[in-house]
Image 1 (cartoon, rainbow, N blue to C red):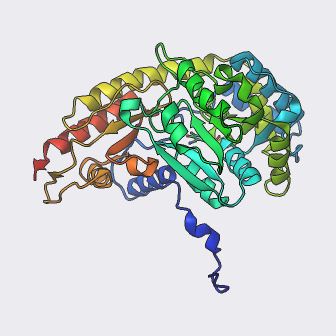
Image 2 (cartoon, rainbow, N blue to C red):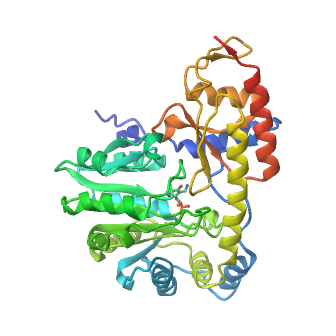
Image 3 (cartoon, rainbow, N blue to C red):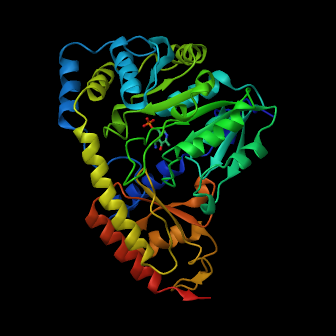
Length: 406
Ligand code: PMP
């Protein structure tokens, strides 16, 4: 029942704050209170936007990119995106099949708002990026969470997909490389998922490829539509500048997909945000067309940190993790710590307790696996310096060594 005296709508009762943003806020608050906090929650590059992109942004401001742009994004940026999708992903799009948003996040939100009817189901493989289920709920849809265990590499199998499709399924959300697990789907895995989808033409696919450039060693990023070109008419490719170009605060992302959906997303932008920031769009076009060494340097840097963090965490008794193929997160099992007792006699019952224990006893802030749909795990971000990785792992090892069996 709606209460007309309440300022906040009942619609919001279904959502919770983003766990990653909440954890970051907690780390910031502890730091402001004078605690020496080691922050492993970061969901963004720890280095600044490359200088040549910053300069393009400054120049754009100085040369008058200070006004509203077309709601779908400037033609210049959309053309740069079309070129990028062709050059890097081998995908051909027309300008009217591309829309720019204030980040990838609002593209996903608007795509769901533009497409979901009440009760439509959205298949979300777990572990998932925290915002997918809440965005589905806010738009009247029903998240259908499909558990993908470590034994499947945290990836959706064709069989699990078959079991979760119903006549009400509107979307399947794929995210490779994955946040929080770093899992990267191979061509063969995407193909086997596509083979299922071919038999269910009513299911659309939202493929979130925002971490595509952060894949390590022999791992290659494969765009869903490379493995399954026949899904093009029902796929929305989501990507953005935030991670690859360290541009999280500029707020530029984009979607490429069927013209009717792109038009509907654009309609929502006209009635909400109007357009992404003009100068940020100019800088984004420059980033996509310009030298790509910065992306490669980022990848190299993260790879070294990944290897180091995984080795250090695995050396701590009770913590176990595999090398993630991509993104900048380690999703580690802490099942071995659950059931143990802290110095103060508190038994660690689950990953939420372990998160609190690490914060209080080690000064290390991480995010619980429960928030990503898979309890008994923690997400550690390695988008931080080697020295912080060492400091944090030293502190965790020391705190864990104090735990007793209960
Ligand atoms: N998708 C995934 C999987 C993410 O991790 C993020 C950022 N945390 C986004 C989308 C959104 O990125 P942005 O809105 O900054 O483009």
